[in-house]
Image 1 (spheres, helix red, strand yellow):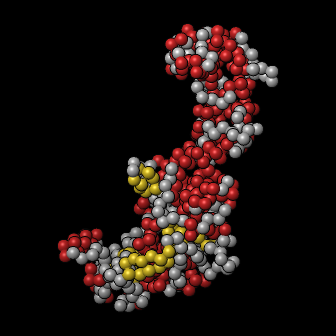
Image 2 (tube, one colour; image 1 turned 90 degrees about the vertical axis):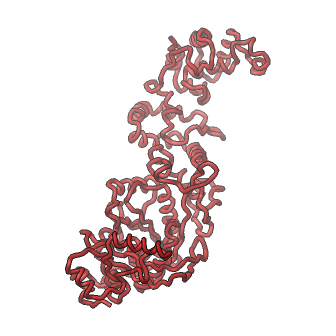
Length: 550
């Protein structure tokens, strides 16, 4: 074992003791059954929708138990830190309403167990690494990258299991004079944990979602403190997780299943530091249907993996949250959205297979949600989205909000079956933009394909005849009759069955004739109720559009 004098020389002279940190972060006083949870993203790229899912679960378990939810930034991998990631995290959490009870001020929070960014906690980690090195539970390792590669090659050649352990851990029991010589030479080193694990030994623990699990015990002497050559000496995830979750009083670690195999190591670290083990709940990852098989939702391959996808599209946060909660607990899909969002999640209802993220189903959920909103509520959401993504649209809508509200009332208010043609705010221009004269593109070509093959002469005749006899919608006006009468005078079949029976006898059906007027007024063959559209637009605008043909 190395001498205390040498061990302490590895660390700053004024490094506080473990007792100092224990006093600085006393155990929490919590109500019975309260859970303290945390979400700890790494700022090494944009925020994954799976992170919103995991953070939402942590938030829900904490809030419904009367506990606390923490946001901790795990930025120990400084080499992979990506500029702008933290700002994107903040925007994503804000959009989905995931607000932490405790976090660093950068996220609008505070708390007595901070700082909540790991790079600001370097001194804490070094204290606990020293606590491990002093009794020989950890040691300095000077193995270079080339030496580690050579060890791996020899292991492969003799059929040994890979890793840094036992006889392959060449610095595990190095004599002090050898360690001192390398230190005197200024050679960089890492600190490794001396694993008490035995190869081939199985260990078990109970996961809050998956029940009892069994794994091979950890045998590897993993790195717990990164290279001394780094200006800011930080730990690896393994040590930081154990130290932070202990000191911050976390009572349940809810994280993704990628960490399942690390539990034996983490339990070893808890035990070595004299900390009580913290229960785990490991979430299955979000999946995507790819042909006939499923795979994990991929950052590289799937645009919907990014939180920005949902924000940019203007998918309502309530709809996305409702859908994600339904993936967690299927019973919530049977409840109304507001009720489901208020219901607590239950860990014993989570599946162990990754839930499938189906964007078509999410669109349906979103359409159902938007259909419950009033016109005023829709504009309150569309306008901030348009301010960021479609400034011209924002200007036009603000200039005539009364028209926008008239349009949104069509087939939405005073009906048991409101229209569900708007699923996300990015679709507003396509669905409702035609109401605004400055946005609408007049249909001027009588041979336009939207007229479905009718002759230009017949299209012109429909347009001019409609304009000449136009009567604006009103209580005593059978608005469609003017189209029907005009169509009959031009030879269109007034009954669909007659047209189907003898299509060569007519230039088109009544549906084709009505579509001419619909296309001229709205630019599409599918739109809300035409009398209500015409009433919202006003007589002058209707005639301007109908008479625009060349």
